Each structure stands twice: as structure tokens, then as C-alpha cells.
Length: 458
Image (tube, rainbow, N blue to C red; front, side):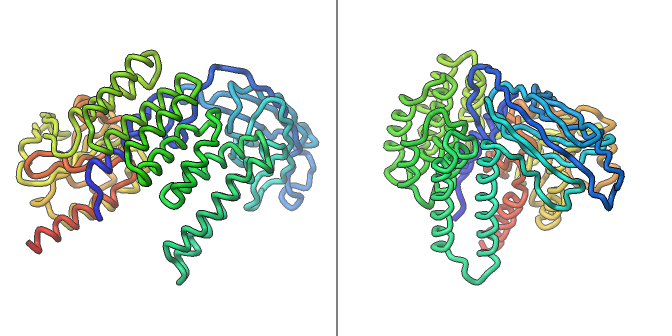
């Protein structure tokens, strides 16, 4: 059964609106007060004898880095001596998982991840080229992180094997999810007070949603509010509770979890989930009231921006509402107005031409246009790249049918765009039908083809 626009919106609204500077949707970690974490890191790097028999291993550069305002931030750096030995102190703003980059002679040899926690002592031995081997950083924190990653990888492979076999069934998937979430949850006993166990506990809740809803809610009650993925777990537990007992019970759960929350940002994140709960129930006035509360109580945080954007979305961009009108100038100089497309579906897409995801989705985009025909759908593509030369270079090498606008910031503001690519589907009467965020071109294609088939049957 197809989900309604409202259901789809509630599924992606959090991810879309949360993407503000310094915070990513994929893992909505809390932002504790700045602290200074110190750990030690040492090891020996070498080159395989068949590659270089000289046994002079100097010149390996080892970098531990975080991100600051989108730019790499050096947390630790060392260069190997002739024996390949290096050592460093890693100074991080907080305990977490950071980037590890090893290079030599200007060439990156490997890029991976490293857990950094106060007092942790990590070591590494590696011979290059790695030939498919993974880096094994030895320490309690990194061992727990590796265990967590291995459990997830094994689960994903098991599901893939199941799909490719003749044994696939919902019950089989449920059994495997149950087994994996139990292993993840119990990692807290194997590696107490470690980051890997912390991530695994939250993952056990997220993975179980829809399969083990009662257990998800029970585990949520045991999850410490200090967990870096507490907000993600709250979201999963709220949805599980709603499936079990309805939205009123889910809102009551949020009340309970809010009382346990300690940092103000964590309380604001739970309040944002209350907004989505009201949207799930189509209680738009209640959702707006909560956004106003967030802006009032957390006005000096990024959650105030989130709430402002959420309120705009509710007031202007929900299903059935008239799509915001616009008048722009095409790349070739012709004027273009949304009203000109009455009687046709309109796909209004916002993108950057240099974005790999957009480029990968171009074949599907063009196939959709070819399958439906220009009498059925008009595609208006608004590039958020203001540099005309970059846009022109992109189109010189590709066939991209449709109407093209360069630098449409004003239109993007009307449509509350802050994740690229984003596409809106607008109906023949000018009403919003659906919103597709990120790599969802296949879903849009499927919907439009299905819509055309339905029309032909009628």
C-alpha cells in the first residue's frame, strides 16, 4: 500500500530539517559542553618486502582528524621514523569516533575510523599494501567499536544471503533481527562503558523497530540518557509505542523520557519528536504549538532553527496545499512560471551539478521523462550552484531534458530546501503531492509510472 504524503513527510521531516550546520541526521548525537579528551596512540608501519626490501619505513604520516565547520581538524599527528615507529597524543573535544588517515609520499594509503576516549591507549601494527585487510587498532575502545561494526556487517550479509536464497520470509527476517539485536544489546556486558557498546545498545533499539516493538520500548527505558544516539533511540521507541498503543501512549512515553533527559539540547530533541508525533496524527495545530515552545525555550540553540523550519513546512508545504508560486528565468534567458504547467504533473528538483548522488540518479530521471512523455510531466531543475560556468560545463557533457534554472535561492527558500537533491511532485491543479529527499529518484519514478498506469486503466 502506498504511503500518503503526510506519512512520507513525517518519515523524512526530522532528517530534512535537522540538517543545520554542525549536526548531521545520520547520527544525531547530543552536543555536550566542550571538554578535552586525551589518549595515546602508537604503532609500527612497514612496507611488504616484495614491494620494498629496503626496510626503511620512515615518512608514513598518521593523522587523527575531526571536522570543524566542515574542515578537517587535526587531533593528533605523527610521522614514522626509519623503523616505522610512531607515537602521538590525541587531543579531542569529546570522546567519539574520529577519522584516521595514513599517507606516504603524498598518497593516502588507508582511511578509516578510530575511537578516542579519555585515558585510552591504542596501538597499531600494519604492513602496506593492506591487500584487503582491515586496520586493527588495539585498545578497549577500538575493540568494542570493531565488535559493533562486525556485528552489523554480519547481519547485513546474513540478510543479503537470505534474500538471494529460497528461504526468504518475514518470519526468517524477524528471527535474524531478534538474534542480532540481542547480541548488540549484550555487548554492554562484554565491553562495559565503551563507545562500541553504547552505539550497539542504541542500534539494538533502532534495528528492532517494527519487528520487536514491545522489546524496543522496554530497552528504551533502560537506555542511559547519556547515550550519544539517545535522540535516535527516542524516535524509534516513540514509533514502536504508537504502533502498539496509539499516539496518545507514544506522547506519554515522550513525557517520561523527557523527564529523564538532562542536557537542554536533549530535551529539545525529544520535543522535536513530539512535533513529529502530532504530524503523524495530523494534529497540525498541536505540532505548531510545540514548535513555538521549542523556539521560546531553546532560542539560542540549533533546535530553534529546526522548529522554525518545521513550522514553515507545516504551514506551507503539506499535502494538498497549493505549491508556492514562482517566476524565474531559465538558463537560456526565457521566463518561466509555475502556472504555465497547469494540466501536467511537475517535478520540481533542487540539486547541485557536482553532486555525485544527483549524477548517479540522472539515468533514472531521464528514463522517467522518456517513459511518461513531456505531455504528462514537466521537470523543472533548479541548480543551487551559482557559478554559471560550472553549470554550463555540466550540461556540455550530458543530455538532461527539462527546464533549467541556475542559482534559484529564492525558490529554494519558498520550498524550505536544505538537503540536496530534493524533489517536489506537484499535481496538474498545482497542489503538492509528495516530497522526495536525497536518493529517492527510484521511488518518484515508481509512483509516476504507477499513476500513469492507473490513468490508462480508467
